Image 1 (cartoon, each protein chain N blue to C red):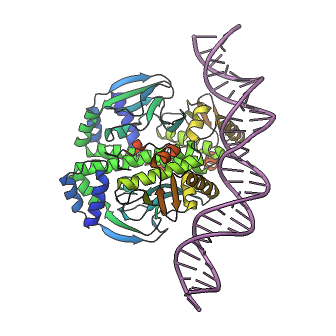
Image 2: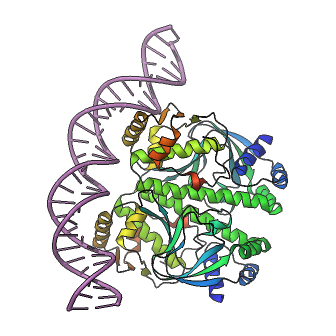
Image 3: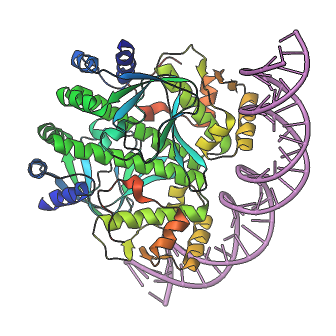
Length: 243
Length: 243
DNA sequence: CGCATTCTTGACACCAGTCAACGTTAGTGG
DNA sequence: CCACTAACGTTGACTGGTGTCAAGAATGCG
């Protein structure tokens, strides 16, 4: 269970001051651990979850399913993230949550979490802030998918992934795990696989970044930021990680 | 001031149970009223606001400014909306807020609002829920701007505007105010003005909807929903308005 | 009435989607 | 260890949708 508290504390520390009372409140939780297989759904559109998911390892994603069956990925989540925090206050899921690769998660019953939120306002503010930053990331995705060409779109996406991985201090410098395939990236960015492929190759040629076999190599962070017009302000971290 | 409480109560009632204690807490606020001219900014990217905006009348919008100067509209807001609620818990604005047409707003000092949130958990949950629904709308915008063709994109946008206007019970059936021009709609949906124009004309030909001169006429709601693949579930309203 | 803004239209170029084939990689079982 | 397979990445040819540009029509406001 310590593992769960640690993941949440580390994540919350990125944007909030985590006091002892917050840690104490989190320690009262008795989450249930669970392993997910690649592509396994943990929450479906229309569900009314009674527990909140916390990612411990691996990557989870949220997605919409369109009437033609197409899938639109909305966000990707790593250790410490709450991909369905909203379900605490909104009954019905308007999107689904699935695992991208093998993932470990914790399930916290809503009742338990609500009880601790009521006892610790700081915990409540931290989780609220978490959901607000989530919204900021969605806004940036609107802009990215609406106003940038495919190359910039992919570059921006890679910037965000790498920056958030660095912020979580789980990865070595210059490298981060990115267990997606190009089809899925296309479904996130609103472009076809072929276009993703050509954009990735263009980026490789710039020597700013390489992405092969689930590992992202950042070779020239500054240049990659320029290519993606990336400004991390929208992530609202207390301090920038060393890049 | 009653006007401000009314607008907020009406809006919160759409998704939450507004108890007497919530109304009492809201009545303690002493907001400052302000009129905005069309296109006037009220919050700029990078600002650290000390008050929250509540829309009383007219339409406000949030937008990103890109490095090339282009503008990406992120959302549009009407009476009762809190377009910068996030600033209560996130210092620095990652986007700007402006008026679309002539608008009346109320400014509530953060300190005051925070004090009342602490006194009334129900108020806090209602505002939190408000921000969560906001996020759901952003997610839908990602999908709309990434996965639908221009005609469906415009149709979906019109559906959302009309549905939210009906939910606010401020407009007559069949009609709602939409004080945008086609250029702005293009900047919201990630398509060019010319493409917006052609999509609007296609929609007119379907006899499902007409949009001329800042007034949206919905002629065939069911057909419009089909054209826009619109399902209002993501708005998370307690009860659907009569359409 | 005159001007500014917005809407509308057509011509044209090009980017990105689709389709289809092929290459590559990784995992599986014999 | 190799053969087989499935998933994924890559490429080219082609098409069509969407952006850009530019001009003209309509609308609204002073």
